[in-house]
Amino acid sequence: MTLTKRTVDNNWLPSMIDDMFKTDWLGGTSNVNNIGVSIPAVNIMESDDDFSVLVAAPGKTKEDFNIELDNDVLTISSEAKEVKDNTSEDGKFTRKEFSYNSFKRAFSLPETINNQNISATYEQGVLTITLPKKEESKVQAKRMIEIS
Image (tube, rainbow, N blue to C red; front, top):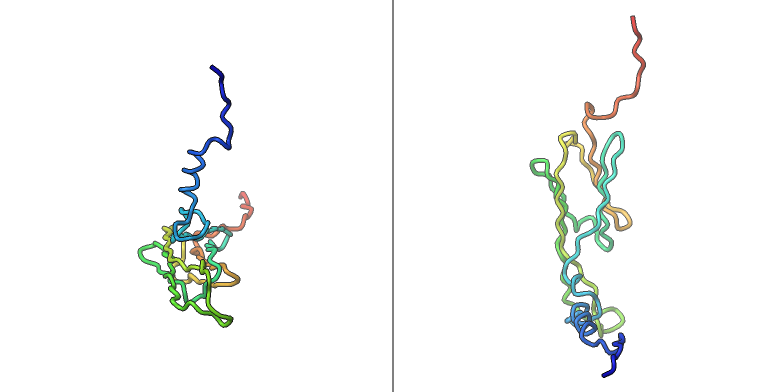
């Protein structure tokens, strides 16, 4: 009886399972976990005067977004676009992988936000929502108190 060392090349079962979960069954080579689901990354910054919510959403226009405020819950959403046309200016597509996915993100706002002055801009693929703080919640400047 001899012991045989199993090498990676002979280990076909894990490779087959890995390929099964990493294959795009629609004909591509992307990861299955990414098909049809896209939640944009969000950064939240705080300054003395406001909070800024930055949403990474390249390839969209400002008209693609819906921003709602309901009972101190800020909801940012975008609906998917479906393009049925299979031709371009140069001819027909032989493969089409671009997609536009829907997403919805919701954030509970603190009571310190001035809900009446929330603003938003969209530039270079980043949606920026500015949430100003109420005057009474802003950091007050340090001052010296004289002892009498």
